[in-house]
Image (tube, rainbow, N blue to C red):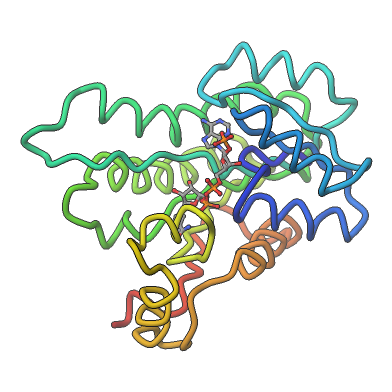
Length: 231
Ligand SMILES: NC(=O)c1ccc[n+]([C@@H]2O[C@H](COP(=O)([O-])OP(=O)(O)OC[C@H]3O[C@@H](n4cnc5c(N)ncnc54)[C@H](OP(=O)(O)O)[C@@H]3O)[C@@H](O)[C@H]2O)c1
């Protein structure tokens, strides 16, 4: 299995879960030091790759080093902070490249060598349906990748393609976005959630495992958000 974005956060938790189930896992990220640290933490059964998934050539080179690939999961994405009026074509393309073009590259590189019961899982986010002010390029990209998953599910069948749509999940990225007192901000956020807690990376990993293993599931967006959209 290949986990693009498996070097931290939800991708790392997914790698831990899949490895604990006996899978061979390759994790990919852009930052070498982070990838090497993740590799050490995951142990010898994990392979690491250092590349940007928006770079098809680099992804293909990495794929060529792997003996086999049955499932691919990608957590790659970018949420540029910019007001619509000040946004540039580059802002929109950066968000699109990181999530949608990266998904397209995964499809182009890995699909030809996948078994017919293989699968792809791509990460979107609740911004697809509940955007925040000042974050429109990322919102557009999350919505686009959900639509793209349906298109891939039709075109690549019987290979399955699904989207995982996380709500607020407690990773370093979320903590950094929570301001000066992240613990207090996270406690307020938890109190506002129907399930009474902020998501944990292992809860997303569990849902990804479902998407990888459930052979009757394709073309869906699985929202795992603690009921956030109900409030
Ligand atoms: N945390 C949340 O509350 C939340 C909510 C909704 C959606 N999401 C989405 O969920 C995904 C994972 O979030 P997270 O909080 O787990 O963040 P994270 O800890 O930063 O994980 C992102 C992973 O993807 C890698 N990555 C990012 N862009 C890449 C690229 N172009 N090519 C290869 N690897 C790339 C990162 O490593 P490098 O930086 O070294 O490349 C890292 O391993 C993101 O797409 C995020 O937008 C997060």
